Length: 239
Image 1 (spheres, one colour):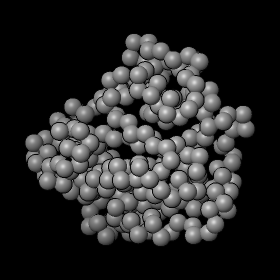
Image 2 (image 1 turned 120 degrees about the horizontal axis):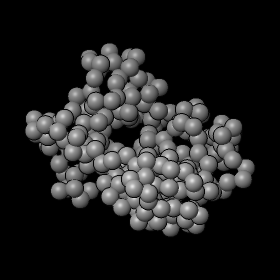
Image 3 (image 1 turned 90 degrees about the horizontal axis):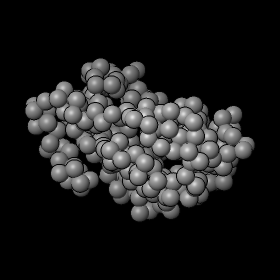
Image 4 (image 1 turned 45 degrees about the horizontal axis):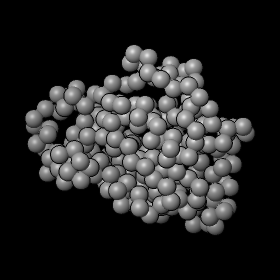
């Protein structure tokens, strides 16, 4: 949702899918079958990164992305979730980068991940099941947010955005994002009912689905996750 909104800005260009899919220099857990579960293959994520000179790594990634980059728009935006596992490294390769980390209520996020993500290939065999357990997705949620919180002070430019706040007050939150990115706001941006209009694009905002996720999770699911994600929920200000 956030990528779609930002892509409507007159200065932005974006890739058709996650940037990690278009270069071999950014390994992803899906390479090993661990869909959205890098905590299960963290050494692969760390050790498979290019150890070559930063400049050549930068040029190689940009060359891989070149078919989708605009020559007239000044900002290239990528939404690769797994790059959250290597924020500092990305900052070294792309020193002019701005990082936006998005957090969401952990119970709702974990419910969605367990419902949608599936281990594949050899990971399914190792996992012993074709679905992830709640403790597994809870550990991944905690690890992802730990990275965001720990590394936000170690990179040049980082902004933390809450899913709930973006949906509750999109205009205000987007103005914070434009200011952070050092770009002028869109030439046209306003709410029209439940839709956001940016530069002629009408973008129906996804509604906050936390309540539905909590209903599906149920009391038992909350009790199973609480020992794992409870401290991070407090740290992120959800409790």
